[in-house]
Image 1 (cartoon, rainbow, N blue to C red):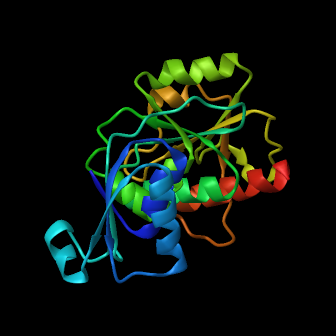
Image 2 (tube, rainbow, N blue to C red):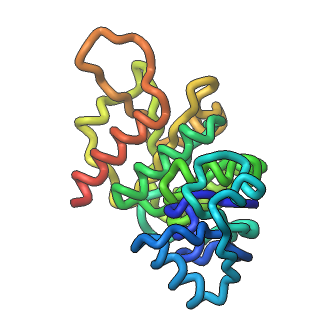
Length: 233
C-alpha cells in the first residue's frame, strides 16, 4: 500500500504499527517537516528516494501527496490498555470513520474496536483523513463482536449505546463508569440488534431545536468524546 502526505507518513514511521518499506520524497522540499521525516527515516533504516517534482505523477494516484509517498506493509493490531473503549459499528464511509478516529485520539481515547472486514481498500484514506490517528490508536479487529463485548463486561466495563427511544436517558445527565465501552452505529443500519442486547444503558443526545433527524456518527462521537473528556479531566 502507498500512503501519501507528510502527516500520514510520519504517523507510520513513529508508531511502528507496520513496516515502512521505502519513501519517495520530493528533493525540492527542504522544510522543517520534510527534514524531520528524512531524519527519522534514516534512524529507522528506511530507504529514501529523493525524486524530482515531475516524477511524482508516475508514482502517485492523485495530487494530494504534497511531495511525499511511503510504501508500507500491513498494519499490526493491538492490545488494549485499561482505558475507555469505543466500538463504531456499521460505519461504511471511510471519511466518517476517519473523522471519528481523529476525534477520539484528540480527546484522549486510545482503544477502538472495529468490526471484522477488509480495510485494505480504505486504509490509505483512513490514515490521511484521520491525520494519522488511525496509526496512533490501539485498534483491535472484532471477529465476534458479541463475545468481545461480553469479555469487556467481564473485565468491569459498563456498556453504553447511543439510541433514541423511551428506554434511553439524556447523555448530558450521565456520569460515566470508570471503565466505559461506547457503541456507535452508522447512519444506514445503526448498531446491530445483537449488540444492542448486550448494552447496560442506552443514551440519547438531546437537541436544542425540533430537528427530527439523527446526527451522523462522527458528530455523535464528537459529543460523547467531549463529555467523556470533561468528566475524566
